[in-house]
Length: 102
Image (cartoon, rainbow, N blue to C red; front, side):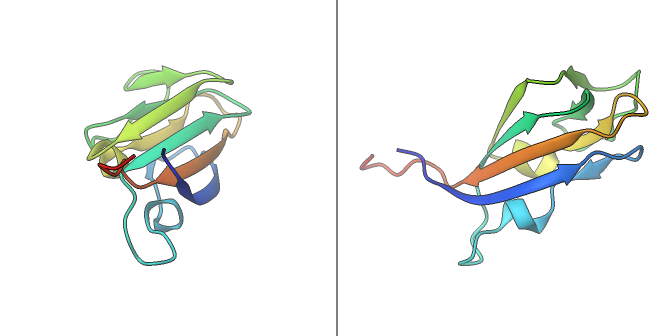
Protein backbone atom coordinates (compact mmCIF):
# COMPACT_ATOMS: atom_id res chain seq x y z
CA UNK A 1 0.00 0.00 0.00
CA UNK A 2 1.32 3.45 -0.92
CA UNK A 3 1.99 5.80 1.96
CA UNK A 4 2.08 9.50 1.16
CA UNK A 5 4.85 11.18 3.16
CA UNK A 6 4.93 14.80 1.91
CA UNK A 7 2.31 17.48 1.25
CA UNK A 8 2.41 20.89 -0.38
CA UNK A 9 0.09 23.56 -1.70
CA UNK A 10 1.58 25.39 -4.67
CA UNK A 11 0.32 28.51 -6.41
CA UNK A 12 0.72 28.54 -10.15
CA UNK A 13 2.48 31.50 -11.73
CA UNK A 14 2.92 33.12 -15.13
CA UNK A 15 6.43 31.63 -15.30
CA UNK A 16 7.17 27.91 -15.61
CA UNK A 17 8.19 26.30 -12.34
CA UNK A 18 9.27 22.89 -11.05
CA UNK A 19 8.25 21.06 -7.90
CA UNK A 20 10.14 22.13 -4.78
CA UNK A 21 11.96 20.13 -2.13
CA UNK A 22 8.89 20.54 0.11
CA UNK A 23 7.10 17.89 -1.97
CA UNK A 24 10.16 16.05 -3.33
CA UNK A 25 12.03 15.27 -0.09
CA UNK A 26 10.56 13.73 3.07
CA UNK A 27 11.55 14.37 6.69
CA UNK A 28 14.22 11.62 6.46
CA UNK A 29 15.83 13.47 3.51
CA UNK A 30 14.69 10.74 1.09
CA UNK A 31 13.28 11.72 -2.30
CA UNK A 32 9.80 10.62 -3.27
CA UNK A 33 9.09 8.48 -6.33
CA UNK A 34 5.45 9.36 -6.85
CA UNK A 35 3.48 12.61 -6.67
CA UNK A 36 -0.28 13.09 -6.94
CA UNK A 37 -1.37 16.62 -7.93
CA UNK A 38 -4.90 17.99 -7.62
CA UNK A 39 -5.74 21.04 -9.80
CA UNK A 40 -8.08 23.19 -7.71
CA UNK A 41 -8.80 26.73 -8.92
CA UNK A 42 -7.70 27.34 -12.51
CA UNK A 43 -6.34 25.33 -15.47
CA UNK A 44 -2.62 24.74 -15.93
CA UNK A 45 -0.26 23.56 -18.65
CA UNK A 46 2.47 21.08 -17.77
CA UNK A 47 5.30 19.09 -19.31
CA UNK A 48 6.94 15.86 -18.16
CA UNK A 49 10.25 16.06 -20.03
CA UNK A 50 11.87 19.05 -18.31
CA UNK A 51 11.03 21.57 -21.03
CA UNK A 52 9.17 24.72 -20.01
CA UNK A 53 5.43 24.83 -20.76
CA UNK A 54 4.03 28.03 -22.28
CA UNK A 55 0.54 29.29 -21.45
CA UNK A 56 -1.96 28.71 -24.26
CA UNK A 57 0.56 26.95 -26.54
CA UNK A 58 2.96 24.35 -25.15
CA UNK A 59 2.36 21.39 -22.84
CA UNK A 60 -0.61 19.35 -21.74
CA UNK A 61 -3.66 21.06 -20.24
CA UNK A 62 -5.08 20.04 -16.87
CA UNK A 63 -8.45 21.51 -15.92
CA UNK A 64 -9.91 22.25 -12.49
CA UNK A 65 -10.73 18.93 -10.85
CA UNK A 66 -8.10 16.95 -12.77
CA UNK A 67 -5.64 14.75 -10.91
CA UNK A 68 -2.10 14.29 -12.29
CA UNK A 69 -0.06 11.26 -11.24
CA UNK A 70 3.73 11.48 -11.59
CA UNK A 71 6.06 8.48 -11.34
CA UNK A 72 9.85 8.06 -11.38
CA UNK A 73 11.70 10.69 -13.40
CA UNK A 74 8.44 12.55 -14.17
CA UNK A 75 8.51 13.75 -10.56
CA UNK A 76 11.71 15.71 -11.22
CA UNK A 77 11.02 16.66 -14.86
CA UNK A 78 7.51 18.06 -14.24
CA UNK A 79 7.10 21.77 -14.99
CA UNK A 80 3.91 23.81 -14.68
CA UNK A 81 2.53 27.23 -15.65
CA UNK A 82 -0.87 28.91 -15.36
CA UNK A 83 -2.96 28.48 -18.50
CA UNK A 84 -4.75 31.81 -17.96
CA UNK A 85 -4.24 34.99 -15.92
CA UNK A 86 -6.02 33.30 -12.98
CA UNK A 87 -3.56 31.73 -10.54
CA UNK A 88 -3.95 27.98 -10.14
CA UNK A 89 -3.83 26.29 -6.76
CA UNK A 90 -2.28 22.83 -6.73
CA UNK A 91 -2.51 20.44 -3.78
CA UNK A 92 0.14 17.71 -3.86
CA UNK A 93 1.05 14.54 -2.00
CA UNK A 94 4.39 12.73 -2.42
CA UNK A 95 5.04 9.03 -1.79
CA UNK A 96 7.79 6.48 -1.92
CA UNK A 97 7.62 3.62 -4.40
CA UNK A 98 5.75 0.48 -3.52
CA UNK A 99 7.76 -2.00 -1.50
CA UNK A 100 8.02 -5.59 -2.72
CA UNK A 101 6.24 -6.96 0.33
CA UNK A 102 3.16 -4.75 -0.16
